[in-house]
Amino acid sequence: MSSDAPPTADELPPGPDGLPVVGNYLAFVREPFDFMTRNARQYGDIVAWEEIDGPVYQLNHPDHIEQVLVQNNQNYVKGDSFQRTLSPITGDGILNSEGSVWRRNRHLIQPAFHPERIEEYAGMMTDATEELLSTWDDGETRLFHEDMMTATLRIVARALFGVDIEGYVEDIGSALEEFMEASESVSNFVLPEEVPTPSRLRIQRARERLDGVVYDLIEKRRADPTDRDVISMLLDVTDDDDQNLSTEEIRDEVVTLLLAGHETTALSLTFTAYALARHPEVEDRLVAELDEVLDGQTPTMADLSELTYTEQVVKESMRLYPPVPGIVREPVKPDIIDGYEIPAGATIRMHQWVVHRDDRWYDDPLAFRPGRWTDDFESSLPKLAYFPFAAGPRRCIGDRFAMLEARLLLATIYQQYHLELTPGTELDLMATVTARPKDEIPMTVHER
Ligand code: HEM
Image 1 (cartoon, rainbow, N blue to C red):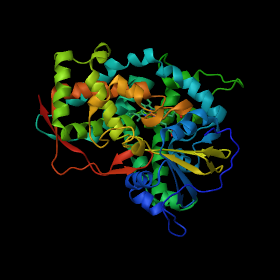
Image 2 (tube, protein in one colour; image 1 turned 180 degrees about the vertical axis):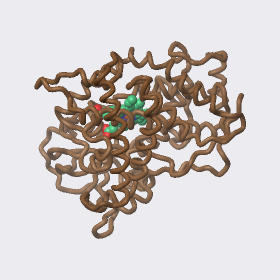
Image 3 (tube, protein in one colour; image 1 turned 30 degrees about the vertical axis):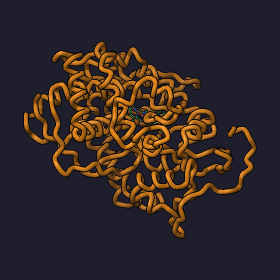
Image 4 (cartoon, rainbow, N blue to C red; image 1 turned 90 degrees about the vertical axis):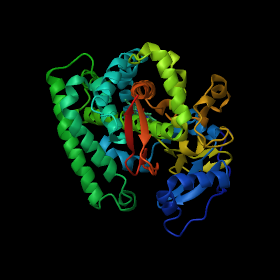
């Protein structure tokens, strides 16, 4: 249905009944993955339900998701619920900003993600992985998700902000962790913004700690710019009004890149290791490829084109366990989707988690089968049947960086270690902006 057609339908799409006042909010926060999946399977491609602050339209068909994220993207903003979660820490960085501020800053940051520039990061990524592996003892049990968070934060910090950020990384990591934990509290979404809940106070403290470190780093670069790092790039900018970016604007972009640039990739590697531990036949095939292509050498950029199964493993892991499980948007003006009028300001939810597990696109969708990712299969999929990095102008700026990093880390780790999941460990996830494990993911590491 064309989005240019005048809104006509006044009927609501089908959906689950809700309770008075809270609507379906409790079912959504208690078990978001099951709730969204059930809705899609029971009611179809477009489902209406109620959150506390209004109607939600859940889109489950790739073509409708493409309409919102790509074809008609100029009619959509991220909206209140997204801003409420992230802006207390990332401010007006490019993950949150809209319109001309977003356009200007995305354009300014883009050169740091140029494909040739990203390729230069490969050696640093494997070095950081080797550093981590040098702390592992044969037979010990590691908290794998924590290890991945440490490695990916170090990598994004070194790549975008230079090696001398090293002394700051631990403080940054713990402040971001504090923020992420505190921002999961339901009270943030239910109580008015002025109420100083314990979690809001924790968020405030995390922000103060983070700001101390990041402002320090910005001052250091102001005094002594480098020709490589993103802070120096942003300090050097003169925008259309001949104004430099303010220190606060630069702070927001730095924190955005540090947060968006490490947590997602760490999750993707954690989910991949979890899936591999439960599918020894996939791990065997992965290790056979690593042995054959790398012959014991550390993987390099040049090896990646031959590590086809490694790439398939990463893709399949991001299908079954998308680190960003859902995307939210609000229409600025009413839109027509699948014949239904979606009012301005309504919440639209599009869940990778649901679409990536739809048996219309994926045969045996709950099976972990990396081999399904042949070129023919990929080109037969509707465009938005697979969107771990979103799509359209707001597509992830770090998608290539993340794919490079995930493949190199996976190859470096599995070339040297077999990882055994501690028996009884389940992947129980909570959904905020990302899908985070509720519990530790302990893995015993065995040298090969
Ligand atoms: C597996 C890893 C990753 C996944 C699954 C992922 C996923 C996503 C998704 C789905 C979005 C769109 C969010 C929305 O529209 O609401 C996004 C945006 C973004 N990502 Fe990533 N990301 C990953 C890694 C990275 C890395 C490594 C960086 C930076 C080094 C990064 C930086 C960003 C930024 C800055 C945005 C906002 C872009 C904009 O709105 O212009 N991400 N990411």
